[in-house]
Length: 242
Image 1 (cartoon, rainbow, N blue to C red):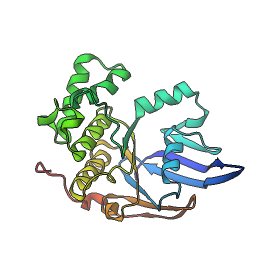
Image 2 (image 1 turned 90 degrees about the vertical axis):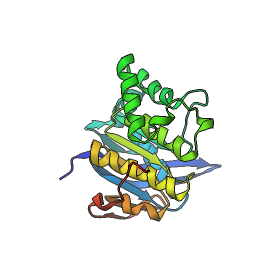
Image 3 (image 1 turned 135 degrees about the vertical axis):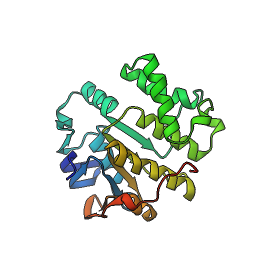
């Protein structure tokens, strides 16, 4: 049985809109396991991204508890939460979040430098991560010289180089065509299966369900359905050609 990596209980989050409050999360419980890819699905405005932000230490919930890798996340100081994200979490966003002036190799190296990794180890780990996502020939290219799919693969390499135990992906395929979207999901699937990470992916694309171990449907700030999708070892393989 997979070990629990993240356990969220009773999450509540509301935002002010004029004089009223809009409750975006309503007593949400969520659990993610090492070695599994959990897909959080729902329409726009359902609370998917807010849920992910609350579970990853990016947004403080109004109520509830998040146990991440055995730590009560929201009882930590802000500086310790920042350090927890740096050391244990990887993020993949819709907009890539790459530095325009840096090469693919430098994009990956910079986060390792923040972690205090030695220069030689930084170079080696960055090169290995970029090779894993199929970008070894493109390591000296800057974002303006890369396609959308390649940019997202750089973002995934930056994430994998840290060997994170928790990976949060917010609409990682929405800016990509179908083929590149599949490549990205195969890489996230591999991060769970081969690296043992707990991968939590927010999306509205039902085509991605084939890659999931578990599918959670969120609507109006509440989980309507949570089901195991069965062994996701049947997801399409990532080959050298991709």
